Amino acid sequence: MANLWSWLADCYGDWGKYEQALECQQQCLLIRQTLNDTSLIAITYRQLGRIYQAWRKYEQAIAYHQQSHNLYEHLGLEENVANQLSWIASCYRYLKDYTKAIEYYQQSRNLHRQLGHDESAARRFMQLANNQRLLAKNTSDSAVAFELLVQAEQNICQAIQINTTGDYKKNLAYDYIIFSLIWSERLRLSSIDDSLMQEQIAQFEEYYNTGLTYLAELGQTVNRADEAIDIARAYLEVSVLKNLDRAKELAQESLQVFQEYNRRKLEASSRKLLGEIYLNRSQHHQSGTEAIAIQFLTESLQIYKELDLSEKAAEVEQLMHPNLDNTGILSD
Image (cartoon, rainbow, N blue to C red; front, side, top):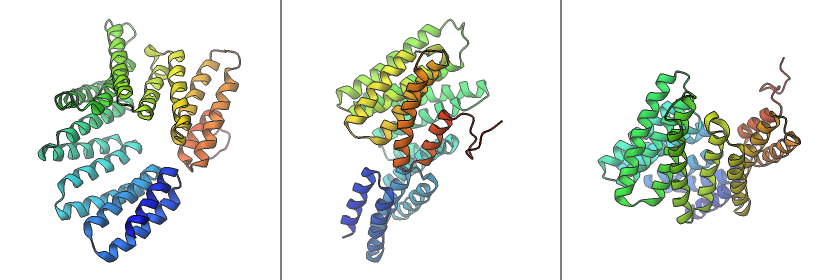
């Protein structure tokens, strides 16, 4: 009975019906608590954390992941402890608390390395590098940002070395894409007359094309489209890379995939990005682009509202109505 409730929760979660998913998983928890099986209770806490995480309610997700972590620690199940540290880290990453995310990914990586889990350790090296990149992107001090990017590059090189040795191609795909995004951040910080600029742009393009090619070869169609969105955003946001045609091409390809596979949240993300691309074009007085931008943003907003993703909906509304403050009132 407990397993059936859990499977129902999985179905509702995949469907984006998170309230029903939680109700089913809570029923599972009640039964497993009466059975007094600590390992099964730990699994259920983890599943509750994953539902809240998918729902973007990260504080609640962290609380459940922490409870699961504590039970696994009590049971001496170190691999599970390492995995739960990674789940907690990912929540902090989505909360944009990159410093805490880095701390938890480091703990997870260290434990996986102690256990000899090379593939898992390599994933943590990659996740560490990505969060160091994101922290650099959100750091105003350019010297600190450059140092973070140096650390990120060291970690991604470690990941590539382990994954090349073990022939973990899926991991390598993500490694090269993260490596390309690290280079995009270097380019964001570089001076326009930097003599290495063209070489760095070539590195950026080589790395992301390698990553996307690996994902295509592995049949990871949706994941490839998801990663392409990050590359498209780099073409939109990084001045020395700016190429709106390439950004639009990647975003439209991704949108088609998400529609075909009915990935609504990702579809909303790609429509939002296309709206931003057309908004950028409208600033250069290209005829009709503002109307197209509003259409994409309106469609994105509708999906986010249907999925009850209020934070993402608010981001889209801000793009559509930049003179509104976060209370919905016109600012001066």
